[in-house]
Image (spheres, rainbow, N blue to C red):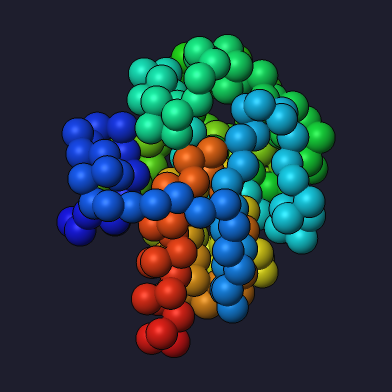
Amino acid sequence: MSRFDYHTALQSKNFSDFGIKGIKYFKSKKCVGFQYDFVESKSLSKEYDNVDFFYVEAPYPKGIKIFDERAKVKKQRGIEDFAKALNSIITKTRKPFAISTSKHLHNKLPTPKMRYQIKAYICELTFAIYNWEKNIQFKTTEQLMKYVAYNYKCVGDFCCGYGQPLFDFLKYGGQKIVASDHNDLCISVLKEKMENYEKNI
């Protein structure tokens, strides 16, 4: 695994170890990436208007604090704040969602269409499916993104981290991704990865 494969709260290294500087926004052939704090706004920005499928790997309760510290968020926030914002977005946005949920987060969200275990990049996750009539279960997030790439044009992720699952969407023919994170350093990493990806297509 390279240093920029996957942004996880389990990693001890931080961005300063890599000399990364944050950016607020970038746009490329395949991606729009930008810093955005959906927990603070409790809504999605206009960049997400043309997204037709949302994929979100939500952090576990302890991870919320770690990610906020990395993003230099001064206001102390927890699972209640995260769930309240996510509830608002799920309710207002009638587009398909695949969201990883912990037991604590799941109990604070609306009842999903389906909920099942799926193998993600570095671990098993429980995914909740919203606003989607398909009765399909996938064994891995890569299988999910492959299906999404065949059936949807644009994927959005407002907890994108380094964007690893989004590159699976592109690998299988997905056309466009819209990605944000409240940490502008993650957006810098995503931009670097996207530049490298687009050089080879």
